[in-house]
Length: 309
Image: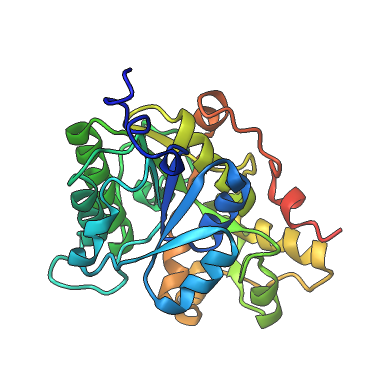
């Protein structure tokens, strides 16, 4: 392609490196940025000025803007040659509680100038809803049962439309529970110390996990190797019910195993948010993650990722 037609070749030399824009640069975004290092120029949307010094320390250029204020996003257009969207939808419920205006605002801002080569959106496996413990892959129809999952389905719809309309290689990652010993609240230790109960075996549900480092590596793999409009389950190889997961963690940390309760009793004791996770059961296939994105999991099981040794 002639340099005057290339999105990089016609720019000054300082802009010719790939520019990766991270929207929602929290724990996973920082891990991905560290893995990229100096191979690319790193940019991140910074919602608050207080966050900017930390981003600069990591070699990331902060860009002022707020997904809840679309007018502040105009400068993002054309800046990133590749975009990682890790920001969750709003948690507050309004009249359009099933919508994700943040992803819509971002896609509209990016369409004002040359499109990035690739766009990766971090969704959730909650879009599948309850699968009755079945083993499922990415062809499973979505069936969201909670408002937050409904908003993720809407965000996925926006991402697909953006990918088709702007001819962007957009990938969607469906992510289960994220954990890591060096992540804030990233292990079950605190919950075990609080003595929060779990369901008895016959009422228990399958739950899936991914180590934060493996997730960051999957994000970068999708950024360079993801197929257009492709969905990927980003999950490890574990097949554990929730209670067994907490029993495993308790044994690793030398803590008492949590109490087991029947569902009828749990509904009276546990908060609604926790109960919502206990009402969905599914086992995830991750063949696309390994075959297409070529991600070799460093922590293929939660036992390997939680082990304190």
